[in-house]
Image 1: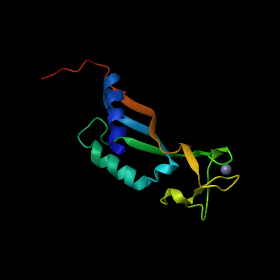
Image 2 (image 1 turned 135 degrees about the horizontal axis):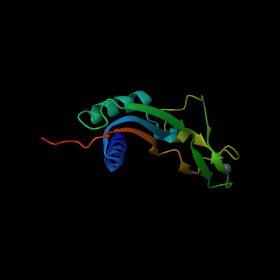
Image 3 (image 1 turned 45 degrees about the horizontal axis):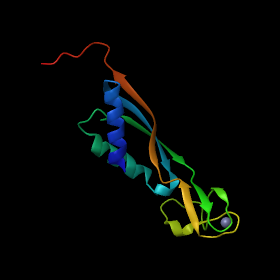
Image 4 (image 1 turned 45 degrees about the vertical axis):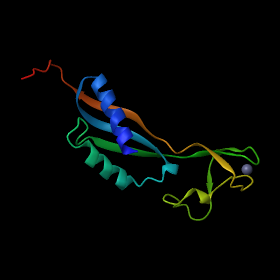
Length: 128
Ligand SMILES: [Zn+2]
């Protein structure tokens, strides 16, 4: 997951001939069940030696949407049990209208970069 994010960030950065990536705003769907600390750690490990090293990672969690196969409801998801649902598996998901578990996930499983702040060099870089 993080490998992809980093790859995209680096491709973007090169497009803008960036010297360094300063900030990455990341939107993470809540159904990825990713732990933010783990994401941060994975990022720090993977970004070592790349343009993204020491970049600031801003992670925002996005609410998931589902479509119910039984009643046709589409929209935000409901959960059974406690609201601290992150980290649980999909069986706790249910339709907010008919409480069916027969759901199709529309969004909430993605992990995308919303914004990228880079430092570009004003001068042309000289190569040795
Ligand atoms: Zn339903």
